[in-house]
Length: 403
Image 1 (tube, rainbow, N blue to C red):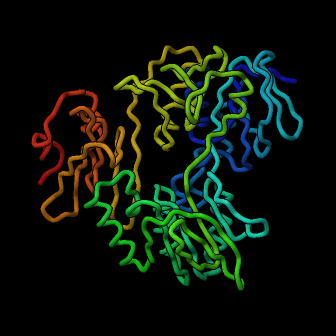
Image 2 (cartoon, rainbow, N blue to C red; image 1 turned 135 degrees about the vertical axis):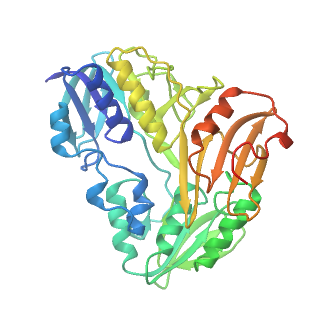
């Protein structure tokens, strides 16, 4: 069994960033990346965005070409998930029975879709979206047409409803548990804008629908909701959250946090030989110091880069304020910090209503900023949050924006 200086479990954005960061500090150390998927590291955002709209192609989404990984000195072992971790012996084991020793280990295993309760025999008509393989299955089904029910008012559900409504021959029903798509993030005026746009696109939007169960009847799927409403469809696509893959971290005896693994500001876990990044890492918020875990692409890249640098011996104190973004038809937004619609919100809307800046406050301090159709202002948003200044709502109008 070979011993590696660096062993990375996972092959997503965090893993890829970590490998590149390691190589900047240590060009020679042996480095193995173990991925459960058979595809090499690729961009995930296009799976629910650009691939459906013709803005991206499958051949363009890999993070590096195979030859680039080889030049970088990174060995990829794909399609064989790691299922065992013995932290005392510093060894991992895969499903295929292979074992590898490590000197330093990074856990970047991410998560898996929270399952929608589905009766046996109906699984092939219910689709989630996490991997490139999921996208391929979902896209193939979408080309067959019919009526699809999209379930989920978060980012993935909202983007799936947009993507599927762009497919010819497909009728889209869309159910959310809140008052509209992305209602947990957007203030009411923007929720109303978004909801109207879905309906304009021909999507039948159903709000405040809490999924209860599913059955098959006369060849159709019948979804029943908590209020007794029922919706008939041919198949279902859903996005109702993610479950972090914590089994390996728990087997290693790492100190856990809600939904993830507690790490320091260098992404090092309670075991000095194990680092954690991406969706799995709960780290000190760079502004407020409170425990923070995020499930966004930018965060995966940034925490992976920090972990890789730290593993290779560089002193790291993570200070990056991660951002997230989404595109809903012609509406696009970028956001930084904690953005929840149940916080104190001030929405600065342009006179035409096509642009807005939303400030999210706690104790009269800005904890998050969402830029609605406002570009190139993420740096400014980060600076305002980092100031931790006490502000009054009337002072926020015009702080960002040109109206």
